[in-house]
Length: 264
Ligand SMILES: NC(=O)c1ccc[n+]([C@@H]2O[C@H](COP(=O)([O-])OP(=O)(O)OC[C@H]3O[C@@H](n4cnc5c(N)ncnc54)[C@H](O)[C@@H]3O)[C@@H](O)[C@H]2O)c1
Image (cartoon, rainbow, N blue to C red; front, top):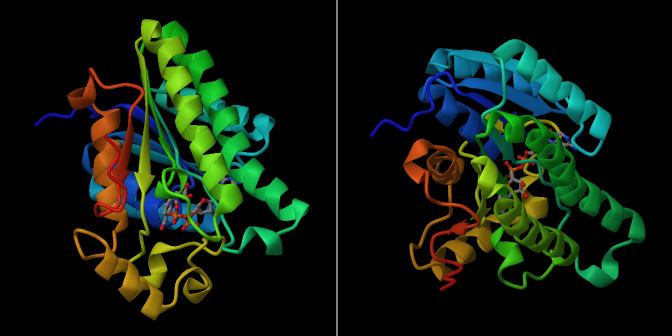
């Protein structure tokens, strides 16, 4: 199937690591032009080199903290200057530190709110200003199944991800008339195959602080599909929703989690 992504200009935030890296490489294989926006420039450059090998029409890296609107605006300008527009935005940046809510502090809440939610507002706001006049665009935001199921040790993060689900539905309704589709993908636990697939800022640098091997085994056993997700599983869903194959799909929230969530 032709996904219609050849030579399209795509921004992937947090594209240097794990799920973001797999998304960048999946778009590269479709022959797209990919801008990787990340605070970890070194890791983003390594993924950019892989993306060139994989067949991207063009690849560039923008040093960008998505919590800072002026840096986000600079990343979009760098993209329009280099690629002539922005066809697709993937809001992939996210971060959490797994703790019971009673153990957290307001400083931690602030960081989780800014990285997971304000970053999506900054990027979406800037993307819409470009996409509306060109009368087309697709935005896919990476949420989490923690937004659909109460998840112990992820209270504030799950709340922010639920905020993304709702925000994207409203943005889908407000901007459909401009040919802009907005969807959400909710991964479940998704682990890298190799340490080289994650950057220095990744949540997965210290894997055991996320899940011990015993916990991962229990998670796998509890899922209908009996296996933990891989970044490519999420990337496949993201590429589909960004593509012309999903041309009549907007405002949807899709779990890619081995059946952890089943929402009718
Ligand atoms: N991996 C999972 O199990 C899982 C499960 C559910 C949801 N998610 C979501 O999927 C997305 C990707 O997760 P991941 O596991 O690949 O994360 P990761 O921690 O491996 O990678 C995140 C990337 O974002 C970059 N980044 C962090 N803060 C940034 C900022 N302020 N500005 C720009 N870049 C920044 C990091 O440098 C890194 O390259 C996130 O939104 C996460 O919440 C992941």
